[in-house]
Image (cartoon, rainbow, N blue to C red; front, side, top):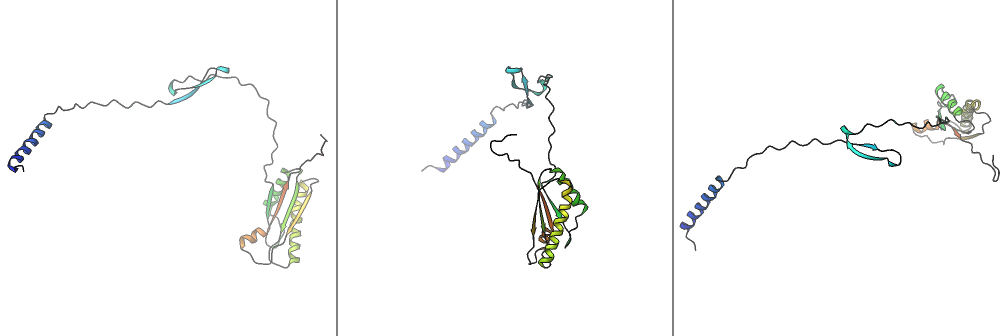
Length: 199
């Protein structure tokens, strides 16, 4: 067993030597760090022309300026007739009435003009209130009102009328508003040629 009197001075000596060795080390000189380089902004430019054309990366500050090019003149495009109005228009009727508001009338007239040659499908609906006979009268009046607006705008159009009678049960107010709406749908005509006949 080791004597504590001899081990303690050894430990103390060892600590002192380590301490002195640390103090005697050569200090490291602090050097200034170089500034962080500014990132390069890359661009893409065309080099060459014709079959030898290629695209390369370049520093945005030193990219060559694009040269003027003469574009071949293209013939003007023919105007394309497009219907800007929807193919279906909903009309909101007041309760138990076939009156069409000025705003709905205007939209319906423009939609009819925008879809020439289309077949017209009119759907008239009734409110749930009232006996079926009265509901049928309201439906017929609403269908007639929508047709009278569309017919002058669409010459020789084929008309299809649908009548929807609401059920006898009371429904939510939002659904009642839906029941009071009429719909006019413009279906484009499909020109089908008999087989073997060409125009």
